[in-house]
Length: 141
Length: 141
DNA sequence: ATATGGTGTAATATTAAAAACTACAGGAGG
DNA sequence: CCTCCTGTAGTTTTTAATATTACACCATAT
Image (cartoon, rainbow over all chains, first blue to last red; front, side):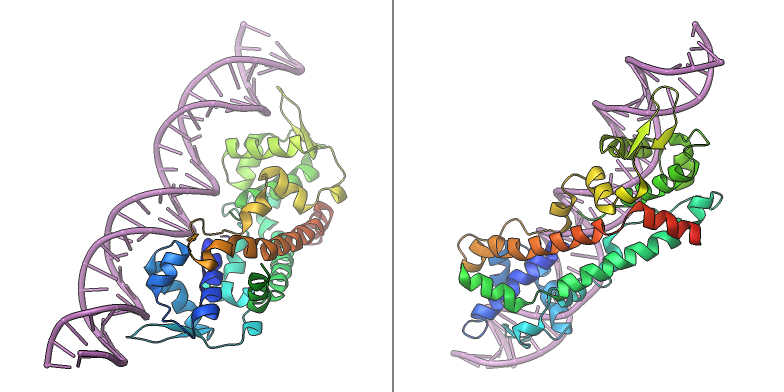
């Protein structure tokens, strides 16, 4: 119900692949060492990114390369790939308001309107940042 | 590490208090029944809102009233009151990147820039919605 | 052909965070 | 001084995130 560390791990991996994917065999083991998280976690994340068409994985022999220009990989795309309906899960709503109370009965419909606006805003915000921006920033350091 | 259900419970309570605070004794027990959550949870949330100057609680005898015009109660204020540094906790970052890897060494500074932008955007988005909007919506239903 | 070093994925365990519950001290007002 | 409330500490329960273990399957080099 939040933007999890999986997102930052995904970005980390994408920078890594963008830098070394063409010249080295980037395996889940290697990404695991660089990110400090588990190889299985990496494989799951990379697998979701693959389904999204962001990168491709050489099966069997290993190695990962980008299959999409950096400009087209927005944070929104990354988050959606990793966590389906992450926007819907971002804001929690208490589940058991009393249907006997006028406020309780209507709270969900009232919140829906405002929460949807917040979700749309966040979506725009995430669509505004691409891996191009991030890799550029990485080079500028 | 997300916008928790406490926020929606707080909004629920504020609508309730705005509607009935002047005419009835709104106790944590009552709010607990209406929201479907625990009286202690309610008291904690209400207590944070009180510290923020959003409402006042009659100690001893019970009862809660708003102490601030609805327009001035933005969702941002509510969230901050309830969850200090909620913006900082919104986006998770993996904690153990390898300092031996050029990417791992710099990932945090790279992410900081973009994540700060997202946080600012969200802050603005939450500041744009006030309890006035929400109560109006409630009346329109 | 087969050993090697990868991926994909399921099942389970561990950890951490959110929420609920219990318990009780202390205030206000009849 | 009794009753109904708040404030808050301490504990337990529940749920979500992450890590771990295990293994089937694939591609290539030898």
